[in-house]
Image (cartoon, rainbow, N blue to C red):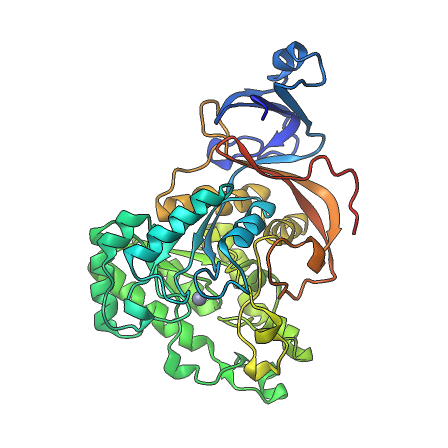
Amino acid sequence: MHEALVFRGVRAVDPSRDLGTDPRSAPVDVVVEGKVITRIGPHAGDAIVKASGGSGSARVRIIEGAGSLLLPGLIDLHAHVREPGQEYKEDLRSGLAAAAAGGFTDICAMPNTRPVNDTRAITEMLVYKARAIGGTRLHPIGAITVGQKGETLTEMADLKDAGAVAVSDDGYCVTRSDVMRRALEYASTFDMPLIQHAEDHALTVDAQMHEGAVSTRLGLRGWPRVAEDVIVARDVILAEYTRARYHLAHVSTLGAVRIIREAKSRGINVTAEVTPHHLLLTDAALLGYDTACKVNPPLREDADLLALREALADGTIDCIATDHAPHSPLEKDLELSAAAPGMIGLELCIPLMLGLVDKGVLSLARVVDALTRSPARIVGLPPPQLREGAEASLTLVDPIRSWTVSPERLRTKSKNTPFLGQTVRGMVMMTLVAGVIAFDVTADKADKT
Ligand SMILES: [Zn+2]
């Protein structure tokens, strides 16, 4: 292994330091020695490159950055890694490989596994196994209630002690107000955010997709916006009352955006995330009954998509989270009503979000912030930074290079995405976790697919 890595002539972007946010900013060199970034600046790598003979050595590796973006390591607050229990869809090894290939140095794993992660034992097992695998770091999220049944609170002190960074019953909503109140109070005792999957299940029985003109036309049972909105409204009231930290998972409606915006304006401690697919697709994608587009919450309408984009741009929505939800053909090659909801997301996040930057919907700085500092703050991880002395957790991205999304090039075990076959622009070239290379395709000369 090299003792030093030199990224030469990259556009280093770190909005937390106002670094590189202007597209005209001069390229810089970033030098990594051991676990740490030791130098950043124009020509900061000249001396070490020269000492290595100009083209690198056994000790020094030089990565020519021409046109590439160097970002602080990306963090995903919302991934389903399926271990334990459904390793045929994904396991820790494939999930962490997909995360590294997507540029993520850290991912948070949702607890709806089999069995549910509602105990110290499962949290410890995940932490232990993920460390043994190495590369991208895994941060378990424990369940709010035992078995995600919405009734009895878990031992959150144990979960936190074992390494859980948050609690969530994702997949299920904590619908009982008394349980939600106690859960907020209890989680805040341990300074853990409570992540809510906001869905009033009584309003979504047998729902296949968003309730609207398209569901009517297709004759499918709908999931109305209000099923999300009523829960978010109640939760905001409870968060204000308990002064707890409330985080809304995968916000999908314009109504929920409005409630979050109002809550923030009153200083209530609420945060929210949005998925790339809710920023890019609407219920019209279901017109061909494509089960890859069945997700929960469902794809909504143009008005929602525009509200979500605007809210992410202005900071009402804090961060981008993938809701990476691998499913095998057993769950997806079925009629729409029988198919499981969810799509994969880890390896598509960067190209899809850079696409929105290209379109002028979001600034690059906002996207980077929403994938780095903002999620770190929510779950209390150290914010990744591009500065001298910081831990070298970095993501190198070629924003120009295009590639075709195909099953062969995805590291995740499952291929359930409507973007299959599409050509996207923006390729993660390298992911570095605390100075260790977790993913590297910088030596690949050409896109083979
Ligand atoms: Zn969910």
